[in-house]
Length: 316
Image (cartoon, helix red, strand yellow):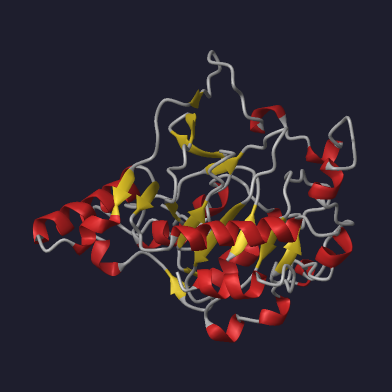
């Protein structure tokens, strides 16, 4: 893991680059043709715009009617099986807090570069202000900056690494976390952890979810969270629930800010298909591995579609 202790090349801050007045995108940000979004209706990989991921009302989980609660849980289960993505409303988080959380991070990214650089990260933990995922030298980079931090468990939390500006940032992060890292546009990938709770930018849509051979552009519902299944739940469920490939496209005119809360398993716990789900006809599809091992593996290359979780499959 020594290769993960430093970035292989000087870090380029995308926000600063985009504000510098450049007229041409540097080659190391230009994706291969097959990896670029295609908006032509005749393309084989169409962008679907007249559909959306399932929307689930969590208020029904509080119903005194057991059948209503059961129906809601079945909707969640079906969304995990068929989509790997869904949106939730009436989740109990204050709409004001959601707006404040987006606001303080937007303020942070509008700070002078020298202030943000005080929190520059390394590939050891990714914690802090970053602009690349993966340590492969010469690899294609994503058009995004991010801030990654740990909230729980307590031993991993280090508030000294959290931004001290704007002055309300640390307080808002702590309050929002009783529900905190920030990401902008990403290449196609499935999330490596357990489950992701995303607070999207409702003004600038950009999240796309793979649906068969097509890409569906998610339409965020106001004050809803987007939930998606990660690779670890796909392994635990023996692929009954799916971690679905997704990506984020960029907008040439507007910045996009979203907050992703990642729920991951303990790093040293062996993750494998649950025994109660295995039968002679449905054997384990995946080899046991710890999240630490898997995370180190995927951090080497960065976002790579579904190829990484596929490598965990048991030989037949």
